Length: 342
Image (cartoon, one colour):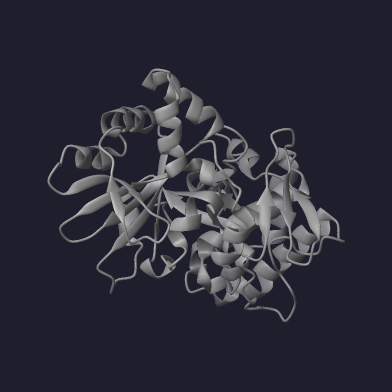
């Protein structure tokens, strides 16, 4: 199994407990009633490589965290509306200028990457040569693969996200890093904290899981003549949001105890559904967890988000709502996974 560690925990009855917190996070209720069924479900998804993890700092667990996390989910840094750390004295962010064409946004960001970001990057030697003209290489790749400008723009954004803080644009990223490795997720913590927290995510098959595999980024960059870092963290990037429909629960790991805090909506589904566990596994994989979102707007603000995103089943695009009331559609990044040729 790819992620066997979490299943090993199920068999450790002395230090691994399953249940849920109340809204205040002060009272934990153990729920062994669904433990066996849940382990069977996770094993099915695990064998299918559909379980992902995301470590997050304990400082995120504020007084309202447990009340809203399974209603709101987690969103990219862009949605918190943090101030840009501008590299070239102009506004460069996820959506760039919505009044400009996708071609202009792509060309502007590519130009900034070439002239401002890469020259300051400490690992710029990985580009292979100081004379590499990114514009020429990206354009040749775009034409050879018949890609539209929006996908090319997303390709640059995924690379910038992978480069990290060195770009000065991390706070504008729409992407959220996850990993297929629980061990890796447990390392992405505040080093001083006694508690470690990890989202346990189901990679749902429908449109709410808009993601890009970093292995494919490496393949594309290699085809561009760039020998990039190995994907040692086994990263999968979600775009915009990890919707609550995908969050099975949260691991809380302390020195002598590990809790799997379940999404209450998942508990409700498992109790109410009369199907066998294999049918439940298939249904959840296709549709995600049914969510009670009546407190969504309140939770969005409480968890520090200024913007929101909506994915309707009838639409390929996703709608972004700004805090000033503006809204616009954005395309999925998932098609990029089909770009790299063997």
